[in-house]
Length: 260
Image 1 (cartoon, rainbow, N blue to C red):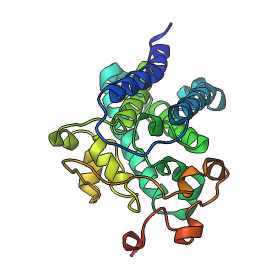
Image 2 (cartoon, rainbow, N blue to C red):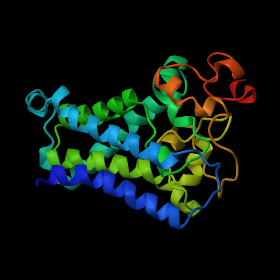
Image 3 (spheres, helix red, strand yellow):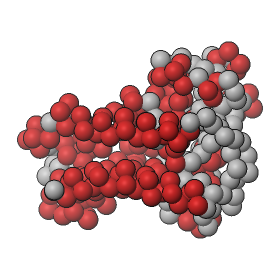
């Protein structure tokens, strides 16, 4: 088994370990959702299948042959550090755009914000199309644009998955940590009912520089959409704006005060 394969396998293992930790040490009492963990595992499996298919859709040999820069000399650690910094900035731009343009919100991102919980099961709840976008961003950036060592590219993908999972964990974390990485309490603000804004980056530096940083000591509010919108999983998979009836078209999940 290659190092690249090891990092790929570490992603679901990390998910399950974090799921176990938040089960033992839950921080916030969110509403119960039927079959919630089963839904999370189902979406995790879909993500794994899409990750396995990505090399077939975007062959690595072609990317290497046409790479714009060759930074393999940075090695694994240096390459992964640069790769993740660049990927996280591009992901910030994508994420903020998905909260700014109603079409992107409806097609890609609303499903992730629909649950009335912020936890590990919700961390896996992404529309398959957005999962493909994330995989494409990581693959193209690390291999085609930067020309990183293959192991560095794989480590970049693992770091992105780790931080994405961590910020959704239903655990308590110290406030100072929020200046280094996005912590769960800060990400709860991002998922807060009728807000669905702020803290778009996995690395807080991008939010600090671009005016979207929030780092509360704790979070006691509500998350997700009001029912029945939060339960319309099939409709969201079919690109229906589930908040349109209650909040009007193009609400982006936000309350009237947040849209003003």
